[in-house]
Length: 439
Image 1 (cartoon, rainbow, N blue to C red):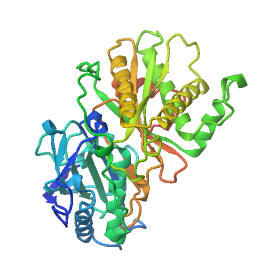
Image 2 (tube, rainbow, N blue to C red):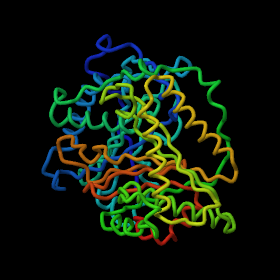
Image 3 (cartoon, rainbow, N blue to C red):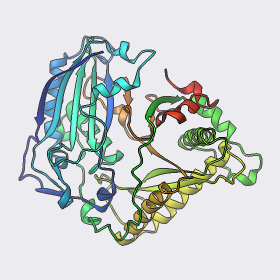
Image 4 (cartoon, rainbow, N blue to C red):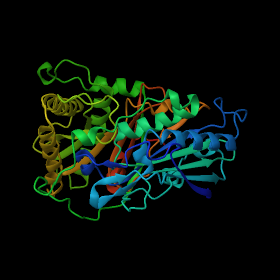
């Protein structure tokens, strides 16, 4: 498979400065976010019905560019450049990088059986990883045309100014502008930095992440459909009612617990059968979850990491036990956050959580894994005017991370699991997940 870049351009806001603030000053949430670009890929057939009868590729591209330019007038930080030393984005309207490409296969050929997930990265504008140069765009987009007329659209967004909520909001706004016009787009708010301004973090962050070269990371794509989730929920019934609060686990709880159980088992196999303590970190969206009024459409980073812990001394590695740990952790986090009434309290809670992450990372006996969820975000509603995507995917990531998304029908969950090669080998043998891996 060959992907050829046909053109590179920069799409700038249709209404440039001074129609927006000259800078976007980072919030302390933005300060603490990973300084990487995060890719999300959307695959569209040639027409809403999979035929070639709808708008041609050239017309689609022109529509995408025009609506992107209009959308950037609202999401103006995305058209700027990061100034690391000043902790701000210079909203200079330099624009979003826009790549046009062609690939010598048909869409359904590529997405058929035997999909090589590493090839997904051919549709990503740059290598997945850190990008903090002053010349680096905050967003890059690559639109790749298949031989059949289908398209792969990758949106590569800087995490410095966008969490999952914001990235999803930007993409959905762009799609809405393309389909219905810019007047139909909900205007975003960029007020978070005024509520939670950047700070000197040197005194608060007590640990540094170790720079250790690990094993090669592999990615696997798992699909938990509604029937699988129902079967897993049935397995979570504890032997004693006292071990449960009586509520059925949610889709997310049972999927995260299933993957966590498999990861704990893989760690044990890779350490001569010795059980290992394990911590997973789950980001919790803080919009509407503190006592501080914030706009519903607040854009930027606005989340807290919450840790669920499994100790090696615990005798049971059962789904219901892990579900209980996750539920208790998130409930406690939400309870704490609901009482936070000023920025100092929020800052302390966020830094305390991050210090727990960093401390755990320094414990050689501790397994530390990060999960992130885009479930509930309208990614499969991303219709630019020619139908909803056939598939939305992550990419082949160079870091250990589990990315969760709703399935297209909305009743299941897709997991993009990136782990070191030794753990992936054990994951492929796990009875609860092996059959769910898409080949």
